Image (tube, rainbow, N blue to C red; front, side, top):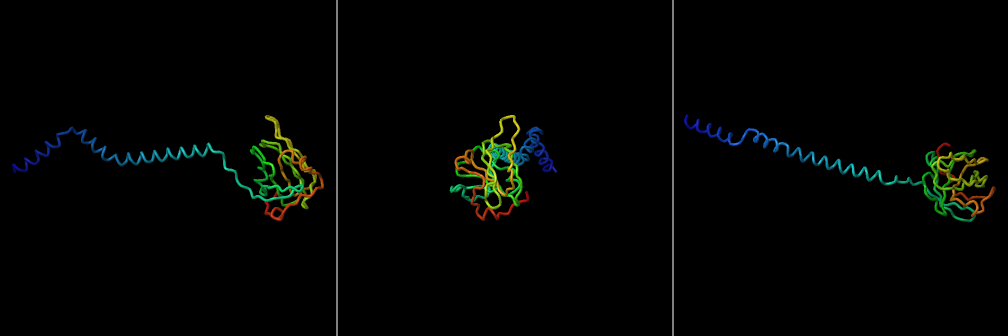
Length: 197
């Protein structure tokens, strides 16, 4: 019996070596260490995701690539982007800071009709040539970028057309484009699938 009392007494003495708060504190530290590591990892992951999101915001949006083809205009080969969907026709050259020489954009419609273009959000002047279903120019215009605070002007085809070709400013004059001149439009453009007008 004395031996049992001695063991119990030694256990009580050992447990009294440290104040109760310290024992509980040690237990809490041991129990929360894995939780703290997990929290630190989660915080680090969130911070990394935040940095990635900020980097993506700072980069300009990637330009969606339109299909391209070559057409012949006044014996000069021009590489054109093909705008055959409602979205690509509506966007056109919006927000572009330049149109390199020797390039353009052709707007393809599924039927011939009267067309109207506007220069909203266009940053450079653009020449436009309206073309009928057989490839002949029906009209042309030199479109000007809008002045700050001013409304954009509308540019009408004046005649029925199936295509509209936008070129760098000055192209109408430099290529001597005029009504009834033929533009050679390849089959890959003529027969491209288009969305309704």
